[in-house]
Length: 164
Image 1 (tube, rainbow, N blue to C red):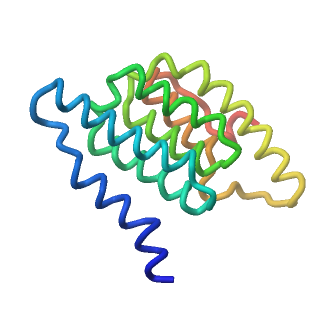
Image 2: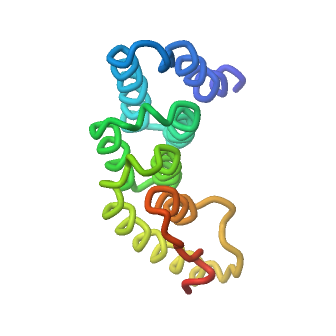
């Protein structure tokens, strides 16, 4: 169990940390950043284990928290935006947080974020009705999508409770 935990959570962080040199020459930095992000996204898409893809999505968000300049490339934003269509809510959460960490340079992701937010709200409505819960889950993609829209556009996006 410990080996699996290390392989799935800590090893990707070590890979990210060892190759993250996004502060030297601009052209090399862009290539390194794009390579790191592509590596993480490939891990998310190819993972058969949901927990592994969840961890990798969180690593993507964390990587862009520490290296937001790596999101200044349109291809990077497009690749992350595609993750918003994942059936896994944790992957959508990680993608939205990654886009929030990029901020205004991710502006062309806004239409997809708005569409993903509508879908997330429908899913959370269904969840609350089906379970009878009155409290939202601790972490779901709608919260992260709202935060991404706030950081990218500067607009005041109402929280789920305020809009329902």
